[in-house]
Amino acid sequence: MRNYHRRLKFKQTLLAYLFLLAPLLVMLVFIYYPIGYGVALSTLETSLLGEGKFVGLKNFEKLLNDRYFWNAFFNSLTYLLVVPPLQLASIVLAVLVNTQIRGRHFFRLLLFLPVVTPVSIVALTWRWIFREHGVLNYLFLGLGLVKEPIGFLSDPDIALFSIMFVTMWKGLGYYMMIYLAGLQGIPQDYIDAARIDGAKRWQIFFKVTIPLLKPYIFFCSVMSSIAALNVFGEIYAMTRGGPNHATETIPMFVYKNAFRYFKFGYSSAAATIFSLVVFAFTLLNFRIFREGGVRSYNG
Image (cartoon, rainbow, N blue to C red):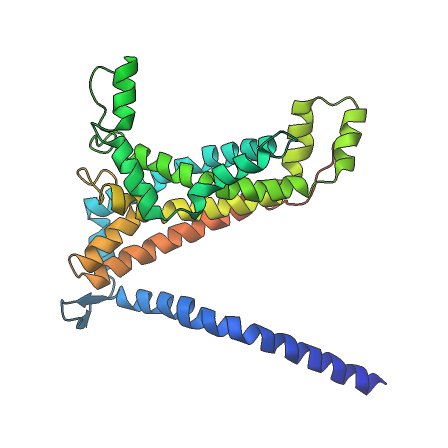
């Protein structure tokens, strides 16, 4: 009998590893190999023909003295400012569309529509809206809010924030649906118990709803931080990194050096450094939300 259980356990373990083998192979080919190849490429100085010359850490040393790299680096970090308001707005919207109001399914669909719209269409539409003679400036001028058109995409001081707004607008519905799923998974008994204890709506929200949504907040915070650091489509379609590199982020910097200047080793070095930054921010999110779990209402 003991041998039978051992054989059964061995077969189950082997079957589990066989099921894991396929996704591991896919990850090896499409994730780990490109990462390793990119790190190796960062130690080479490549030509237009793709020939590489080993230069060690020279590309990394050049990056540290490249003001355009640091400009792109800080622009990418600035882009993280979109994460807190995006998460807060998503939670508020999820709470609103979770209530028993007429037309809530329509509002859910309306808010989720930008998520499934291709980023190129979204970016070009907002580029048309943001033009100096576009809809938004026409509205502001008509209402007397401004005396001259605002350069939403031509003013270096506000261009990056204009694109950040577009990113927030597009991602709002996605995170709202995740939080909505979390809200619908909260046991009604917890809410009823808090009400019996005399808790007000805001107390229920902050002491019951938010703690129970903590795993969802963690997931959305990690995903939105990674997405913000790696944003490319909106910037490429709306400004190409301009004006005067004001909206150039690291992905845009890597793209330009790789496919416009054919500095594949140099761009790989920039991508390697920034990958470490993204990894660090992911670990930071893990640390912030490391407690996890569910906290009950204490009255």
